[in-house]
Length: 360
Figure 1 (tube, rainbow, N blue to C red):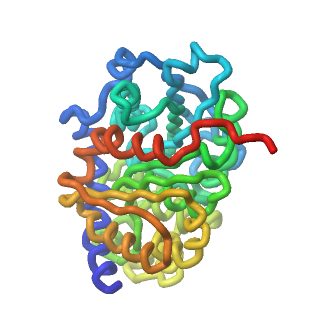
Figure 2: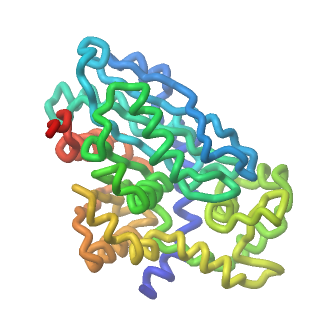
């Protein structure tokens, strides 16, 4: 545990700097396919819709409760009007919008997998969780809104009522990368009645100790939304985590409490951040994860989150939670599209139920 604590302190900010590659550098490296280019390759249909989140209304950040959601429908959706499909909900990482994530994961690879026989047709759904501070962390907070309920209840309900889905947990999966990997575990822990299979790709936030660093002390000087917006990307994640895990309605205008005040640690706030770390949450929610049909997690050998993911693997094993963990050659971002095609989609094709439940 001590090794994990030390590593978390040293690598957490680095991990979110890596995610910067998702939003900017990745484009230059052709990791994110432009949406127009991706759609040209599709035989199916990619819809961009708005879904209103009642659970997101009145969030103190002022983020819109009307969220962009991308829905991929396979080719047979139009030609087989009586057919229903399993759904995989996909969660993007910190600093991304859903539009970028669709190109980053390369949803078009599903059709190639189906042709190759390594995957089956399914519906893919990607909600946009970008917030004032670049990411909601898929948590329940007065500052950002209740993203847990929005995703597991409202969004699932909307998709089931507007599309031909197999509307049961056996036919629903959840996958995410980085912050989205964190959200996959978090929401899976909270809602095992909704999802049956989880895939966490390079998940963050296994054990966030909220250490008071010089960078964290500098963040304390940020008092307005305008000042926050001017921060370099790599320095904004503490604000996002504070909004997700230590919101304070009595502390405008950002409505957050940082784990530092006047340069000194704030133990209560630090405890809140720790309580929202996956390895701590596991102590309470291991029984929920044991209800999953399948859990998969992976991380690159050159990823700064490698050790914390290994520690989570060990913690899951110690808790008696059945799962599979693997590593691959690569860093935090470079293999996302390849892994989505060769690992994630075949995983859900094998684990989800593709036929309607028999009536008794």
